[in-house]
Length: 120
Image (cartoon, rainbow, N blue to C red; front, side):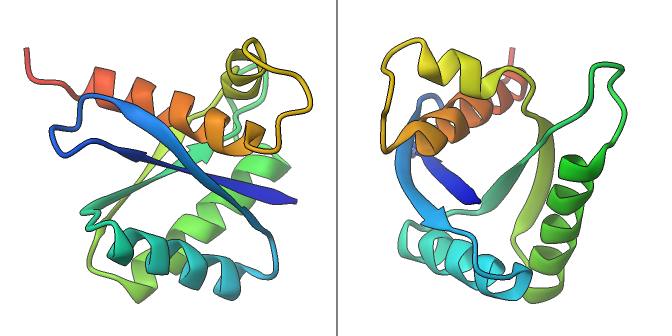
């Protein structure tokens, strides 16, 4: 399993792929994410939530919820979850066999989150 990471610009307007981290364990994954967040001065971490076709929490989404909880226990940063439905398909439209596919999918998720939270 891979974890795609993305970051926004300082104005929280544009998301871009950052990197892909290989899954090790929930604790190690949380530490890896927090290290990247600290390195880039993040104040919020958005975790993609893979809801099923009825919008319900399935096995993948439960893993994401547990990762979000592990992060909340380790940091005072704001930890949010966001529906990631279709993010990989949207990311794949640009390139096939892309080693940054998961990071591009993370950027799609983050961009949707940023767009939804933009002041009007």
